[in-house]
Image 1: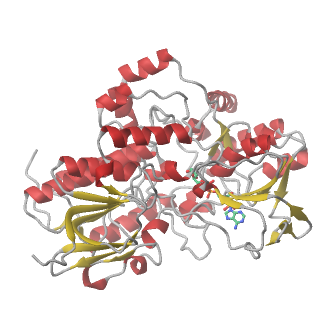
Image 2: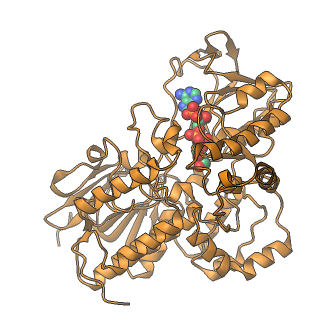
Image 3: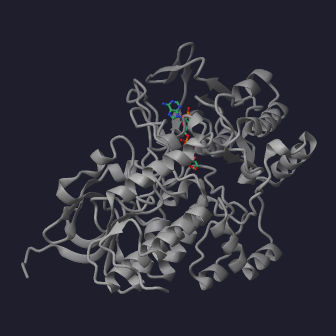
Length: 540
Ligand code: NA7
């Protein structure tokens, strides 16, 4: 062996969030040697970085958790219906400790490139610690909302006070007491943080480009009876979650809103509004496909906004009208709309009064200069493709992934790419992950990918990759599914529309996690249909 030969692993995984952690656990359990690189100083991914006030998961905690270990499931006790970021991060740490994951993770390390060496049939991976390692399998568990988007507003560097992005929040927290704070952006992060920032700051100015539909969380502490009941019924609860559209414990309603009398429909909306959370968005099966049905739900929420917000001009500005309900990710809030009834909170509609520039003292719109002490960017992420495109990924024949994806991501099943052998992606474009309970999708992906790896090792296959035909077919299928829905009508991050210059392609698989799981399972039982160099699977 060559003294200078890079360290060789069976698998390298990028990212130690919930995807990377479980992938490590599975591959290690198969006897593989694994190295994980993580740019953060510890595990948790999204929940490591997004420490802004009010950060919570809007999937219920008892569902937003791993199901792969019964012991883990039984020993962990969630305290709230919707867990806070600190609690979810504690959970991630608990998992890392319990399964001894940290020993195989290199923290504070960013992967810069991964180049497929055709001669050795291996991936050569370099990091910012100037290390080069090789791996047979290369897994991108880089997260779908992990590259922050700070808009290029002129003058942004001139501001004399501190600026923050919700997705890179200081670990010690920020004290806004006595300050005038500007918040730019009203997606989930803005809507969660604005009520708490407003409580602390002396004055809060919210700059809104597009109003969002937000549903009340109705968060609560979980009582022992509820937790006991969930734990006693976890297998059933998880089974339901795996096979419905959203990966949560819910029976999908097959009724169409359009077929239901107005008073009954209204009663159902009222019930789901009172129950709180995202189930409202699945009140009827045609809400995301039929504009007229969609309007019934949208109108219901618009009425609620008018009822909550006392100033009618502010209420009108907060009311979404430019896109159908739920075609942008609906938000879940605690007291968001009511926050605008405070005397110390103002809303600036930058559609009518656009931001011209950021100055030394604050934010200047076409009409006004707002002098502020701090600016919070709640401006979202270069979603789904951002983190992957930040790495120089080079496949067979020098094919550069970023170039292949220039007009939109291309993959098979959202997990593998033609020309990039033994490379897998978790919870990114082309899969239902972002439109579901991420945990359900992550477990499905990780288990399916590790089964594929196990099978190909057992068969002595070597390199596996999807065929171009299978990949083209998947890209077409994704577009056809999306075109049958209302989703393309919104300028959302699902469409890449929040990032200037990003191709407008609908990124997620919109067919639901249950259908997707069945499809992936059928691909596997048919000898990994669409992959090349995988031998026919023996009947099992
Ligand atoms: P989102 O949902 O992408 O929200 C970002 C917000 O920032 C949204 O209101 C944007 O308005 C606004 N934005 C983005 N760029 C600008 C510029 N240039 N000027 C003004 N306003 C801007 O990100 P979040 O972090 O809130 O949530 C991400 C996901 O996390 C969420 O969907 C859940 O899945 C959890 P726009 O609507 O684009 O007009």
